[in-house]
Amino acid sequence: MYRASKYLIEVPLDSERIIVYSTLTTSLIVLTRDEYEKVFVQHSFEDNETCDALHDMGMLVAEDESQEETLAELRRGVLNGDDGISGIMIAPTMDCNARCYYCFENGARRGTMSTETADAVADFIIEHCPGKKLYISWFGGEPLLVPGIIDRITYALKTAGIDVESTITTNGILLTDEIIRRFDDWGTYRVQISVDGIGDQYNKTKRLQGIEGDPFEKIVENIKRTLDSGISVHLRINYRSTNRKSIEEGFDFFNGKFGTYENLSLYGAPLDLPDEKGYSEFDESEGNLYLDVLKMSLDNGYEDDELNFRDGVSASEENNIVLGNLLLSPFPAPCMMINKWRFAVDDRGLLYKCQKHLGQERFSCGSVFEGIDANDCYRYFSTDELHDERCENCAIFPICHGGCNANRLMYGDKFACPPSKTIMPKLVMAYYRYLMDNQSREEESDESPE
Ligand code: SF4
Ligand code: SF4
Image 1 (spheres, rainbow, N blue to C red):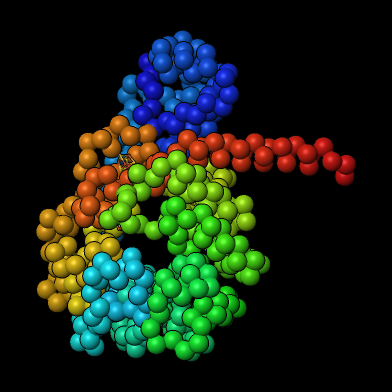
Image 2: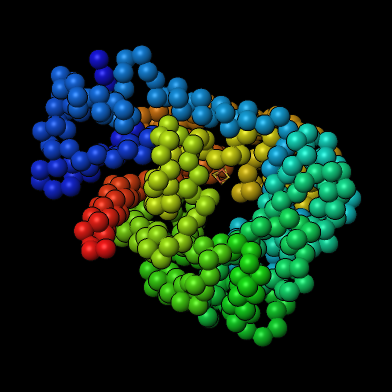
């Protein structure tokens, strides 16, 4: 005997047919309304052939199976996956040369790491990195304000025999030739640059300090310089969820200018403004804009290799890129920060479970001086338990595993859901259309004469 999976998104295709998508396995099927009603509403499983096929796709679950347990097992895999630090986020400074209102007005700290703290960060990592391989995500504030601290920590780690690779999240205004030359030493393989609009809008939002000339012209030059160096660039265009003009102009501008670079990934990200609105409160037009922005990246061939990471039940990776860009890929955990050994470190050497908490001591869970403190905040992240019982029956669960713990802790349950929640049926429809277009293209090329 079967039961229906909880992890299905159903979308009417027309008056006769329904698309069913499994967020657990990424299988998609089109059923007639009769077929759908029989199996998923009346729970009649007499048609063995259909039901066995739906079972293979993860849409029906056998009596002795538990998809919840499969998902919990995936979370435990991430939670206990390491026996020491293999990845860490470091904010060598919380200071920044920009004054973006959404960060600055939140009263963010502005301290910079001392050389003593930098040495303590390196010592802490060396003590807890048995694998001798480390991924560092340099974050801030603006990490490129203090390249000397990055040098110092990297040098100490390498001297201790640790193989270091890194990424840098930056506003990009300090990406000079000299900085780019240091990437080799820092093991940097990717830079994420955030921009806010173009031209005057960029300048007004960023309010960059101490920059000679026009900051927007400078950032465009720096993006080109970084792309020319061959390093992977993730260019993120921040936008307000209601401002279609800004993201469309921004995307067109950067796509027109740099769209031929294969090392570019270009995408838009709605600003997370919890004081104004949670992601899960997007209205219809914000949801439509969000979908259009995702499609801009997809249609222009940009792949976000961070989104198409898939470690679920389905083995096929054929459509990973499109599933990733449409935010339909299952993930093994809410995020990698549930791992017992994952931390973010701020300028004072305090340890946190998420970059969103950097600089906010009340969320810290130890320090590089005193060691890890497995306190309430630590345990809130590093667990395979769920924090909100509504997640137990949510169809999106295999994608978000209970959502963002940092937002949940800071702003409450409703801020934990991913923004994709508001447009799930539209995302499934976009995926269906992509599959159909692909199929037609393949049929056309089969029919075309040799
Ligand atoms: S912001 Fe949320 S989802 Fe992202 S790393 Fe922090 S806890 Fe994880
Ligand atoms: S966090 Fe939100 S979207 Fe994710 S499972 Fe829970 S209720 Fe569903």
